[in-house]
Length: 402
Length: 111
Image 1 (cartoon, chains in turn blue, green):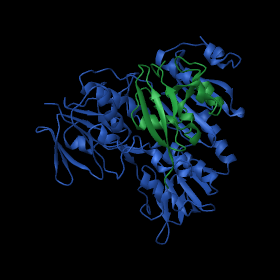
Image 2 (cartoon, each protein chain N blue to C red):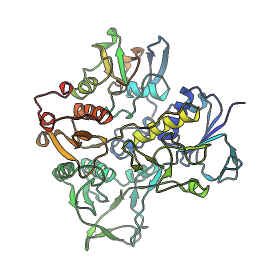
Image 3 (cartoon, rainbow over the protein chains, first blue to last red):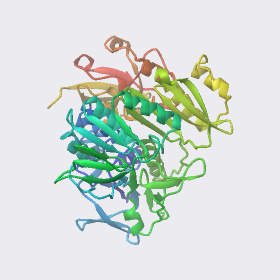
Image 4 (cartoon, one colour):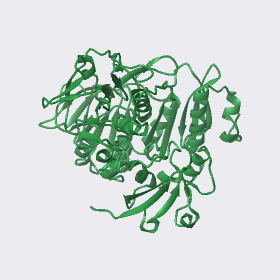
């Protein structure tokens, strides 16, 4: 009798798990439960080409329409799980149905962090996480409109770039003293600030949002003690892991469902992968990664472990962001104490910042610099030592660096 | 909106062939991953960020493709077993002219 696998969460990690389980030879029944109306789709284009309108909806879907049926995966969409009954190994759905499992995978992802200030519930305040969110934003995304973006992280800045391109009047409010403070080095923050200003985006750094005002819909944002008129507000202040199912079932979560290096939770029948998890990374620190790389790689490792071929998850994390014609590619996890080495000229809009830790390449941030990114990523994986002056010498091509 | 559909055939390193249909304008990477053609990883989803969607284009089809962009060229520098016929399939768009195109897949996408 083949085992039954249930997957809760129909996103990038869930889709990857289905693919990997089948690739690894698992031929039992799989049921995947998703609370959105759509089968698994790519989220990265949502704040980029899809919002801009140059990437049509059908292309977002990770698999062809008939893929799930053909591979024997039952897809339950518009469906949420209410509880996991670990003793009897069932998942209870909100409609009362129960799904029995031998092995369970949680790929529940993350949800947007909501603002809690006065007026935060006014219509016209948008968040961006799903297709439905972008469709709602699209409807009001018109040239000349004033958009106030709360949060100068990846999402906020990608939307700012699209909005500027579409002719909206854009202001970004960021509570920290620099852009993408959580994700990139100060050098990158300054570079991106200049690029956004060049595109006409107004940046309000060190400016926390205090309230929203308006008559029936948002009309003003109060930030840093000042009022700014706005037709649209987009909030991008991070995400929180969807870990309630796990915690209610008694599984450990520390701002992320705790999993081991095989993506397994404390229950030998339950795994978790992607944005909803916390794991000990390759450098020995507890991490919660929010990225496609982690969704894909951790789901692959969960699938391997579920079919009895466990492999330690120690992949180098990587990230990317598209803003204007700038492709930012990052590999590895930087620390403020790293020694930074600049390669190339930011003025040329093609450069990289390498992060060295005890002489070893720990991370790379590359802007329109694919060779630096790819070589840097390889080096991070290998723990390569390299002299800063060699690294900075652009007369030596990346491929020839040893 | 019903875009026209055209066919592409992907041949695995083992010789196994997969023919799939995809809409005009889609990338040849998308056509493969959405239909689970093994041998194209495309981890980044087509952002030209991972160099894991390399294909070899049969000579008779090469002339119908646009030349490699600088980005594609540099990414290919880091892909395994690159040949003169190598392309990154995320950078190739399906058109009427490419209907029936044949692509060979490398043994692995990871160097």
